[in-house]
Length: 409
Image (cartoon, rainbow, N blue to C red; front, side, top):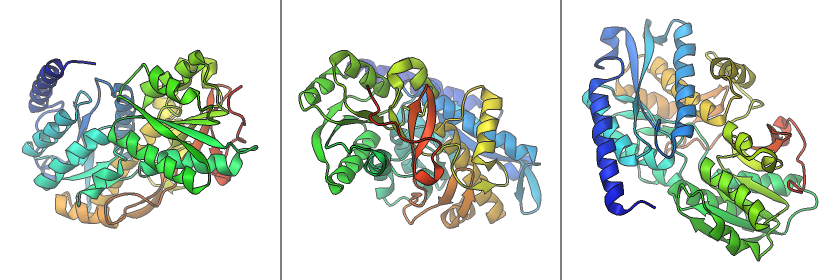
């Protein structure tokens, strides 16, 4: 753990560097997009720091959206075709920097924002968005707490955090034979992970499973052995981790080392990420994961086509299988573009109203928002690592393979 003084100094330095970079701009000054023939969107991204891997995938999704939209001639705004131009800045995975960069975009005249990666960063940004009269399409801030603040200018295309672990519990309950009896939860202590753990525990209790009390560990931990040791004596049938990539890898690896061998592991965020199976090798086999999107997601739109079309485009552009972090980013960008087209304007208030009323099918599934700005209309999928590859196992109507149970040997 860094000392408080060191962390403060590091954040101050990162903030200064990021703001200087933002002041210079990556493609010149911003300003009124209609005058320059462009539709300018701002995106403060986690390109360095603890969330850099997920941030890089998010940037890929935004970049693919920019390319696909411009390949059609641009965004139709009241009969004028505007070139989509996304300006990226590095928020260093720090919420304070992410928020200050949104302020910097506002100073530069950029009112339409694509979110950073992660709930903490997005929550910081949402407060600034509201104050500035900007509008944000949220690709990766799933924590329900963001949308309990009464904000009216942030709209999340992804399913809420409470569904991440709950979806795996539903899948296990429907598909596993024999059914497990006890479920343990391991969670990072950030807001998203804690909300995800609560959603999973509530669902497990509702379905009649014995829930072993959750064990928390610091966000970003690569040593989770203490939490694992605490649940090992309970011999849980299933271990669910509400985590991000680094923590998810650590749970599986260190559980193996410490002799914790449940019928299955399930984790949020980590298993669908390409690095998960690559890092863990055979230890990743059978691990379940919740995913915002898969190649079998139903729906189609004019820019990306189907989910399978989207997957092929990511593979072609970036040389790796499509990840849901890519897809949710492209979906947020798509939502913003469609809202601008519907409004026939780049005015933030007009675009905000169009986003609030958006109800469309897409390669990402349903994009529609409730009164708080959450997309409660799109179900999540459950994947499993089988033979080193991620396959959809739930819901049944979009499954690519049957659930392998038990998931560990």
